[in-house]
Image (cartoon, rainbow, N blue to C red; front, side, top):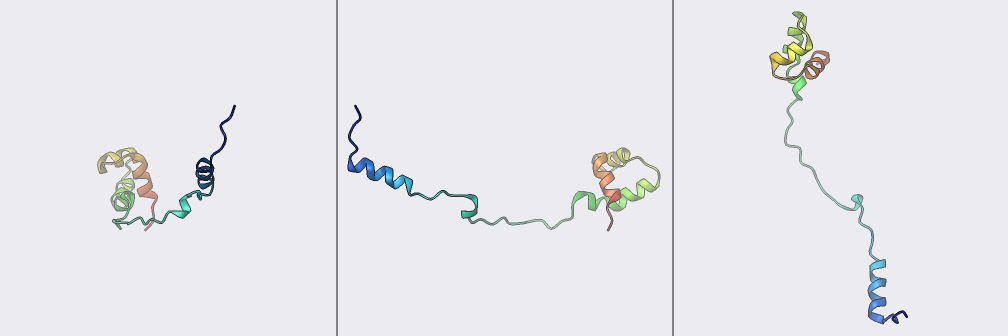
Length: 80
């Protein structure tokens, strides 16, 4: 046998049904950007292009510049 619904229980359940759903669009926030430095591949582009013109492979250029071959290739292909 079910318990009869009291006014306190009824009002509490009614209150929870009326609460709005909080979504991401309702939350205001700001993200500060602290750095305006160029990306690593942009910083290495001049030296990477010079080494590539000397005939070095991207893997070797990356090792010489302290990064990997993918970043060295990206630096060589980036245009200022």
